[in-house]
Image (cartoon, rainbow, N blue to C red; front, side, top):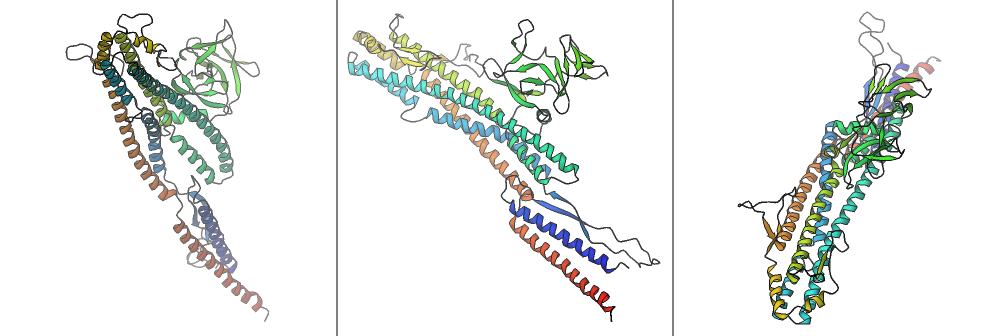
Length: 556
């Protein structure tokens, strides 16, 4: 039979594993409030039996165990909950950005209130109505001028604030990209550390937690569950790579691409094209005639220019003749003049397909910002249309003969302000004969119901009535419809944000019920491991007494 020393070692293994369990429990408790921390647990199994004796064996029947061993320390995490969480966060990220900006837009319009555009419209029309009663009264003319100025300033201010919102959204987009690139840099470092720890046979649980935390943060900005996004990040995480936006001539984002730090575009094979993305987001390439950057519309004529190894270092370049040469000057392939692909001597080919995705594949906060930019452009365009029609119709009524200096209000879509009352407006109105002023004031008052603005659909095409004629609305109706549209869209976004927030909180609660640290549960475990440790220590104490009998008893 096994001796007392074997039993002593078995008890020691129990104390050792219990101590490891206590240490892991302490780690859990200490990180209970650490963001992204996942509860850890020791995986313990029984040690192999001492031998395989039988009834005829000198060691006797049955097997004698050798105690317990700790195989690993693992995280208690459910990958399905992670998938659900990240599947919802990118949708919530887009909705949250819309929610934030639509609420801001409501604040800008500030309807209804005494200082709103609708209130300014009412004061404007009423002042003209009063002027029709006293056409030569200087005080009434002053009131008309002041109300016209107030209306013009309100419309201009709202339009300017909407334009400023777009600038802020563009800043948010750039900050999002910086945040993503910063996260990629952290993942790049963690990837190296994880490989080192795994190479030593250990499980880097805390490093895994940091990776998951970063991915959770990224999931608000992008859909981390799609193959396209994973491939994009796998390419971007390679040394020396980063992400950049591509933009159109208006500065609107058209896609996101993996580039080198100088803007050179990276292919899905991990190589480099002869096209770059400059600081303005434009696709550029070197004009061989001038040697300067030349802006191009797309990457249809791009060719492979450099080959990179897995460490992101250039090991071969393409010369002016299209030959691919390594760092020793040896010819190892060529670039196909038609396709731009790299064809190697061993038969391998490297694609010119850029590692990136268009805006249609982008989601999360980035998508929300891009959609809000388009939405703000739409509202700014509507405000400019209203302002131009207002100015044109005011001048049409006041200055029917279109005299050179007869207009009282000016419109400039790019001006600051967009609408402004001319300095000589008081003299212009004061010079109008009384009987003519009565007619002008009446027309101006009736303008609130006169249908002067053509209705267009979302694509800018005119909407036709039942007779096939362009549908027209009054300036007041046009603005009221715009405000109502804003209210409806804001309400829809608020409902979506509320619903998605509840879904996300539910998923997070389910996830935390598994991955999160419960203080009550950990305290129960701590007591259990403490008793286990004490019991193993008691066995050792008993063995000490037995050994004392064996060793000291032999002296008698």
